Image (cartoon, rainbow, N blue to C red; front, top):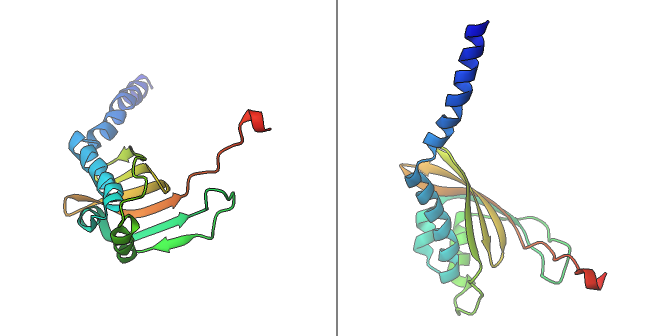
Amino acid sequence: MIRRIVTIAALSLVLPLADVAAQSPADKDAVRQAALDYVEGIYTGDTSRIERSVHKNLTKRGFWREPADSAYRPESVMTFDQLMKLTAAWNKDGKRDTSIKQVTVLDVLDQTASVKVVAMWGIDYMHLAKYDGRWQIINIVWQAHPPKAPSTAQR
């Protein structure tokens, strides 16, 4: 019985380290760079950054609403080819606000990762996978920024 307790105690100290080992600094940096290539690629119209960071089998699902509205439009679905076209046209005149850019790496394992990106258009949650040694975005679910709560002075 004591041997079993000691074994369980030892495993409880070692098992958390297995997750840390899977999150190498190089992998975390590469995951972050893929997310940055995505958002900065759209901001600048640089489709080469999308090609580098996004897998050809991408599925992007999202929920848009106009800033003045509280209701979201029905779900939209976008493919890799549609994202490439959007990237080329989205900020063609350079007049869009590209100051909002926050990348948070949520989790990195040896083969998959999750990232949150806050951008001008809203919040993207991404799943990435390592393909031939390179981290690429394979799934995105996103929404426009949530409506702002009324201030206490307006209530």
